[in-house]
Amino acid sequence: MKTITWLSPQDEPEWFPPLERALDEPPGLLAAGGDLSTARLLAAYKRGIFPWYSPGQPVLWWSPDPRAVLFPEEFRCTRSLAKRIRNGGFEVVIDRDFRGVIEGCAAPRPHSAGTWITPEMLAAYVELHRRGYAHSVETYKDDRLVGGLYGVRLGSVFFGESMFSRERDASKVALARLVEICLAERIVVIDCQMASSHLESLGSRRIPRGQFQALLRKHATLDPRPMARPEPPDTSRG
Image 1: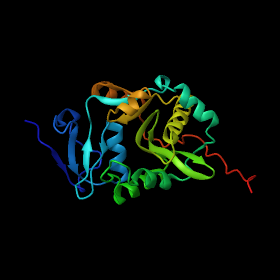
Image 2: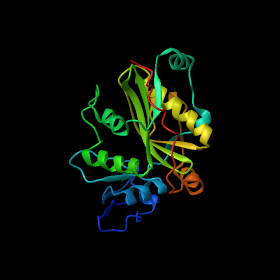
Image 3: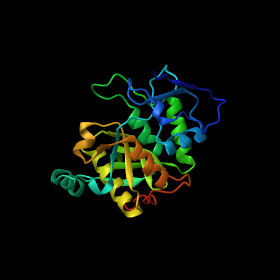
Image 4: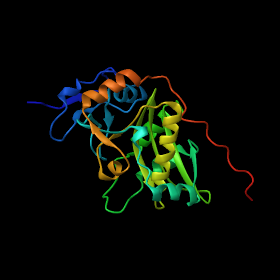
């Protein structure tokens, strides 16, 4: 019988149990405890593990099987989305307001009781961003942040964390931009973590955890890399 592994903040940050020990119910739960230090987060992502928990819970570490991923060349850009990208009046930039994107993802949403992005999670990913590992793709309209996404880049893998929209299709526009960057920079896979009908409509699919691990062994490295140079602000506006 599988049992959950408890981590201590004093444990070596690189240590996690084998992924095969993840629980079947809830699916993919591997460990609890530890901390959200940069070293532990990087070690987790490189192995295909991510934190996800609610306020009041210990840090919970997950590695689901199958894994939801989006291969950039399989992104499904519908005709309506392509039209919104061309004519929606959106501006898409990289890493201009990383904190603002996480705060947007953490904000209350319809049909949602709360958020898993705790203040500790926010602080941990802001630190990852400061060190060059975490990035945001931001959608603006009339100089207002209306959507975006954020995640972690390790080598040629982008681990998507969350996305939000304050205007229709704003997060999809950000995802389309991320796909363009991935294709240009030879990022081979975007990790979507958990499957959803929304992401599957955009081209994501499920692959066995072992296949995902093989991709990480080949393509995930710990050297921080920029996603793209942030576009300079448009100073021509009055």
